[in-house]
Image (cartoon, rainbow, N blue to C red; front, side, top):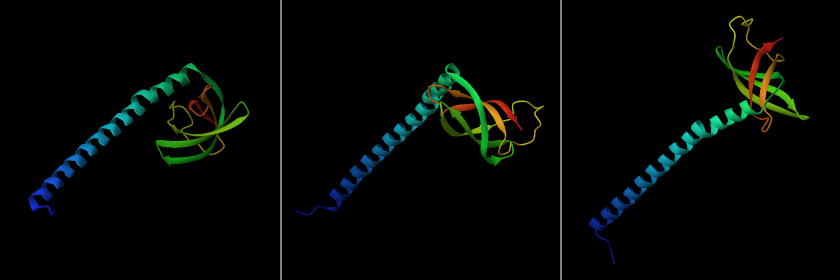
Length: 127
């Protein structure tokens, strides 16, 4: 039994409608996932860091970025384990030497005692 042109076009129209609906559903799911990461999961990490903060000295192992927006890669120790973490660096005080950080500089980091992978720079670098 052969399909007529009209039946073929009807099937193509239905398939296109199904694909468009699937794309809309996947797009909405993606948007909801991104919102969950930035609006729910991110603040949970920050809250946990505030509530369970411990402090230690960290050293710069690498630097990336451009002036004004520098990412530094820190190495610090917790319970005998060494952690490496990249964080954004923004000078906190204008009176700081204003020289860009360099490898080997140290700083104080606040890290989450429950999950030491999460940290932030607590005090600026010193040489």
